[in-house]
Each structure stands twice: as C-alpha cells, then as structure tokens.
Image (tube, rainbow, N blue to C red; front, side):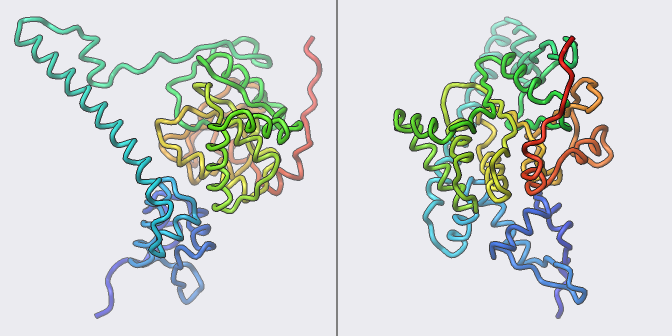
Amino acid sequence: MPSTAPVLSASEAAQRLGVSPKALRLYEQRGLVVPARTAAGWRAYGPAEMARAGEVVALRALGLSLAQVARVLKGEAHGLERALTAHQAVLEHQIRSLSDSLDAVRSLRSDLASGRIPGLGAVARLAGEVSPSPVRFALPWPWGGESFELPDRTPLTYITGPLGSGKTRLGRRIAESLPEAAFLGLDRLDNGAAAARRQLEQDDALKARVDEAAAWLVEDGADMSEALLALLVGLESEGPAALVVDMVEQGLDASAQTAVIAFLRCRGNAARPLFLLTRSSAILDLAALGRDEAILFCPANHSPPMWVLAVPGAPGYEAVATCLASPEVRARTAGVIAWRPAVA
C-alpha cells in the first residue's frame, strides 16, 4: 500500500522544522539530508527526510558544528559528550531556578498560614511579572538627544541600517549606557591578529576558549583569518556583561560569516547579550531569526531607531531587507563610507 504520509516542499519542511530554507540547503550541501526530487525537479521531504533533518536540527541546537553532526549521524560519539555536558549544565541551572521558586512559594504559603499577608512585590516576582528595568538613554547625534528605551536584552540583537544612518554611534551609546558593557570596534582589524596573539600568549584560559571556538568554526566551514581571530578574541574575552560588535562581518568571507552566526546562536539563552552591527544577509538572515533575537533598525532619514519584527509586512521589514546584502556584495563595498557634513 502506498504511503499516505505528506511530502513537503523545502519551504514547508523548513517551517515545520523551525529553520530557514537556507539552512536546509546547507544541510543538503554537507550531505546530512538528501531530499527526494519531484518529476519537475523540486526538492521533496518525506517522513524519512524529515526525521533525518529533525535529528540534524536537534544536534545543532545542542551546539554541534556541521562536521560534528555528520560524525554523530555516522555513529561516532566524539563531540556529543561535551555538548550533552553543556546541555546538562543548562538543565541543572533551570532545576535550581525552579527549586528556588518552589521554596519561595512554600515561604509565601507559610506566611499566609501564619496570618501574614505577603507583599504584592513578592507575589509579582513569583509570577514573573516583574522584569528588569529598561535602560533609557539619550540618542547621540544625528538624533539630537531624543530619549530612547532599551527593553530586556535578548541574547542576539542586530543593529542595521543603510550607510550613514548612525549605526555605529548608536552602538557606542548602547555600550556606554548598559552596565559593564563593552564596544568591539573596527580597530580590531588594525594589526588585530598581532594584538590578538599577544592577548592569547598572556591568557591561557582565553586561548583555550578561542581554540575551541576556532575548531568549531573551521569544522563548520570557516577558514581561519586574521579578522576571524581578532573577532574571536573579542567575543571570548571575559569581563563585559554585554558586548556591542561593530560590523561583525568585516573581513570575513561568506563561509566564515555563516559559521560565526551559527556559532553565536548555539551559545544558549544564558549567554551574555550581544549587539551585532551588520549589513550582511548572512549574519542577519531574516528567514532564520529565532525567538531570542531582535532587530534594531536605523532609518536613512534619521528618524529614531525602531524595533522591527522579522515578519514580511511588519513596519520596517522591507527597509531592513533592502539595506542587507550578500557577503560577496558586502566585500565589494567594504571600503565605502557615507559622506556627512561636519556638525555645525
């Protein structure tokens, strides 16, 4: 009897799996998933292909590189132990948080039983209704000091906009306004590799983290370069509670950009917030944004920055899509600087 299970197109399969069609194509290029083809040559995903793709997505969510995923699918356990150990640590942290909440509930119930009415603040915190206070600051020029509010920080926030829209000035002001935040500027590319190597020579712990991250990225298809090394040293350095990175794609080819953003997405929700300035469609893939990622857009007409949902038709979505370009185009225009008259 022929199977009645649905056969999905690439876009339908991607939506069902919660990834982008670009990610599915990447899995196919690496031989991790081999979709069937219709008579017209279109990719088709049946139950077997969806099951395999689901395994790939799950392993990626654990923090494995594509090369590590391939080895696990072949039956090799190397790399899986470390990923499971890290995942266990996350789960144990969640258990401790739930245990603390349970203790708080018991304490409140004990107060009630004793005739003591708990404060509304304690009840609200227990219900998760109280969030950290938003960060407010005055926008820099060219916005002229207008007040701006930065809500709860997500693990990944993309700051984008056309040339000359004020992205870097906004990024610097965010780094100045957030407690214990740092700004990683383009000066990392000026003798960046030499400076990065000096840091690594002086800090064995940093070197271990950078080596591990570099190995992950290389396995995911990136070629190590001076720009990538300088970026990794900045990303893996301890200290800042949040990090703002100016034009994260600068000096990186397409494969490195794709590997870097996949690596950053695998950090988990507990990682420090990152604000990534970018105009690359590989870094800011509108079809691949997760629930813990946000877009902050700087309009060309110097209207105040705005939060944009990664949903076609949402306010600002088309403007964001228009200012993004592929890594190849970004490489050709890397030296272009928008001219602006001096401030009077």
